Length: 185
Image (cartoon, rainbow, N blue to C red; front, side, top):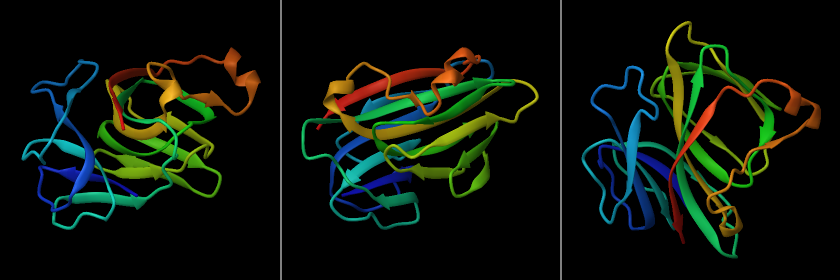
């Protein structure tokens, strides 16, 4: 199975599920910065997260990753995580693999094997239960990314965020997650 991110629908693929995310006209100060909808065809506006048996082809493919999808009941979740100035997502994991795409600000991603600074327009993939720490780097405004994950259906309406070190629960958690869609697969 492949999870892919396509911009403006400029790609070809037969897909089993797709959710598009479209930015709001004026995102200054708005959280979340966009809206999402389940789609049955690739749109020519915004970003579309796609699950398919084969990797899509075309100029609009921003990212595509082979990923293990659980055989049991599952969901395709699209949400948006917003970080105010100074926010840190302490070292954590998620119960689902997925793609992220930065839509505002700048974010430092610290994984076990690399550290990378993401800028607007950058995409990255996080495997299931892969520890990561994220630090907002902007001086004003909000940093946010849109995320798609395939998660067990038991997480419908629930957070998949799990701190690696329980002591970090005492630290501030300033980021806010806006859940757009939990689509049963």
